[in-house]
Image (cartoon, rainbow, N blue to C red; front, side):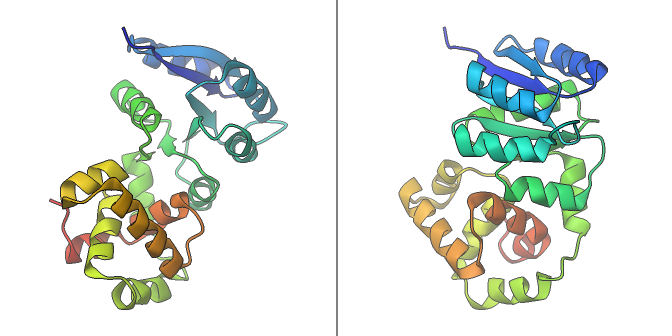
Length: 223
């Protein structure tokens, strides 16, 4: 019998915590090990309970969800963090991804979407809800022209394919299987891509890939 996925809920609204707890309780493979009402408590309970996944409200008193995310990712690298928000605020989405969030969901997700997200990040994937994806796709950041130029001029065809698969939400192992290469080769390509595009971390690469997913999919369809 496999161990359940342990989850910590961090949200200052009791009604939200009750709702999240209820939705997750439908999945017998998920176990809630703690509940926090602010960012500071989320950090302490993460250290104490060592959950595999933290569901973190973005806006909380005393310490915000993003500030708590930074600390948790610095001190508990094995813990995955999914940010939760009532609205899809582009700057907050970007900040969350840049600081290592493994997922970002709006609070209108269904029980199935929430449990799927928890299961996915627990295996190393990154998850964005449909609303968040649409928000990022609609944005035209100031750096878009230069990045678009770099996508055309500096990346090889193979690197284009890999970025397209990253935008589609595939893990390195899944990309390797799709392209018939080793996971290590995929990771090497990803490191080179990040250097070429001036991206500092994996979360930044995911964000960039999502922002340019329309362009990438048109050039290198993933299916």
